[in-house]
Length: 261
Ligand code: FPP
Image 1 (cartoon, helix red, strand yellow):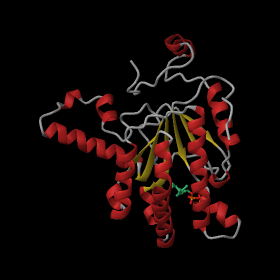
Image 2 (cartoon, helix red, strand yellow):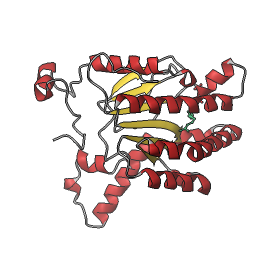
Image 3 (cartoon, helix red, strand yellow):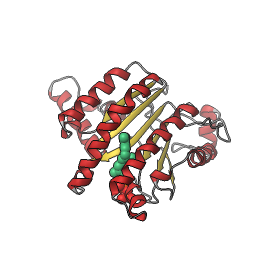
């Protein structure tokens, strides 16, 4: 189904989402939590369709945190099966629709069959540009920052970089999603108001939007509300309102946006 553009012509280029509430959705129906994750997979499709429809260039989804490995074995196993099924079922169609798929996080922690499917999905969709879909799997924002610090230290040890040359751009380039503009809008479903170790570096100037809606209940109208709200916000990036308006007319690229001048 096609949805019309939001109130103002200000669409986020990059949307980041914490898909929360699958477990509660199932528990309220007295069903096992895995049923909630299965229903959540349908909302993933809805969210991707919405982004394609709205011309959003990048979507980053928090599918599985580094901490989620600590959940009951049965739930982790069910989630792994769901990921594998989704990779088998959806990738071809997403590729046909111009979606480039990428994974961020500690992929070596997944079973080889899943790692293989991740690599194949990335390879087969690498030429697509309509929407970059990044799936954060076994991802943690602090781990991301630590990995960038390690990469910087290695470059210094190898004589490729001097400590005095380490600036924000050098760090950003070594973070996950370093080649994308930072998220403009962050959405978290499920009623909690926190970042939960998602994209800590990248969310520095992102507009945050929270909803009580549980992830499996997501619909296009909820996403539209988020975009309408985003369109009304004044993004100042630490400047005064007058300064930020004079820089771009209606808003400006974040300081660490690799596409900014
Ligand atoms: C958080 O809900 C959700 C997850 C930990 C898993 C997200 C996974 C999906 C949406 C399924 C498919 C995803 C892909 C990319 C194919 P929760 O279990 O923490 O919910 P709760 O807070 O109600 O317990």
